[in-house]
Length: 206
Image (cartoon, rainbow, N blue to C red):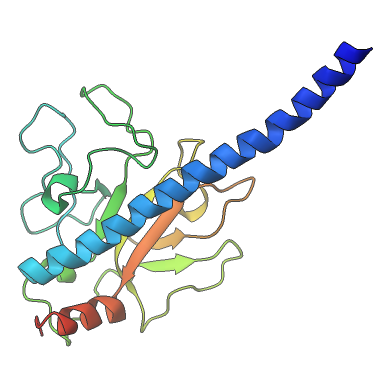
């Protein structure tokens, strides 16, 4: 009887522990995402533009993690050009790819508005891609005046894109962001035009 009680109590303790570990891992991933946002702004301050995505898939290639040459392709998503941004070569959960056949898992997806990948960005530069962020209920997080000019996201523990992030098209450029739910565990951040313009002005780039 005592063993049964201990087993039940032990099983009950495992759930909160697992939840705490998930929360800790997610917080670490959000911190990595914050570093990426800062790196994108730093890149823009140095180069007067945002980087193109990276589409090289072989970790052995010298171009792996390097932004693609301009003009950026907007037909499909690329990956974060981590080497061009000088950020770690790991996914959202701290795992690297070491072979061309390795799963992309939680590695960062990246999309940039083509006009903001061209130098120089000025206060008059306007988005052309109409990238928009929606909440879980479909409400607008960004507006026509605060459009995203760059988007970075990773799949969560389920290792698949959820919600609008799984159905993006050039004609329906919508992404989804919000806290985790039973049907959504992606981690997404964006760089809005007002913030980028403000940072470039503060850095003397405008």
